Image 1: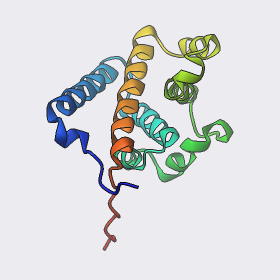
Image 2: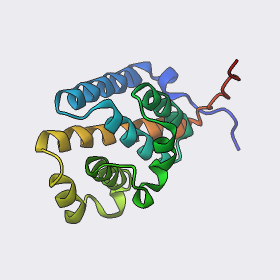
Image 3: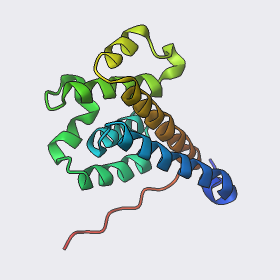
Amino acid sequence: MSEKRVHLSKTEPTAYQALDAFAHTVGDICAANGIDDRLKEIVMIHCSQLNGCSYCTRVHVDRAVKAGIDTDTLMQIATWRESHVFSDRERAALELAEAFTFIAEEGISDEVYDLVGGVFTEKEYAALSWACVSINAFNRIVIAGRYPVPPRTPQA
């Protein structure tokens, strides 16, 4: 097994910079269309969890904490269907995140589309969809390159 992998962001920085610029554009689209940081980060974390991307999960957990999401909520994202801490909007967004992450299995089913469309406006739906596209792209880059997640330094 190869220990060292091609680091796509270093090997082809222009492509990575374009993806990073895309991610910033998606963030702006979310903000402009009523998707707050709490909702966006919940989606980013869940897509990353589903893909098994610990690096991106760490990045977005840190951002979620800055956005005011408490530890109890963070711990329940992976088990959101059994949890009662998420709003209808958050539950619909988590449903959409799963559909986008596993899109090769059945696409975005009519059931999911109707559920999410019944909660979000067209602009909100589009913003969340682009957020899912963005994080799933980053997950694939990080997983393929086996980017390490450094241990946290002990708090004083």
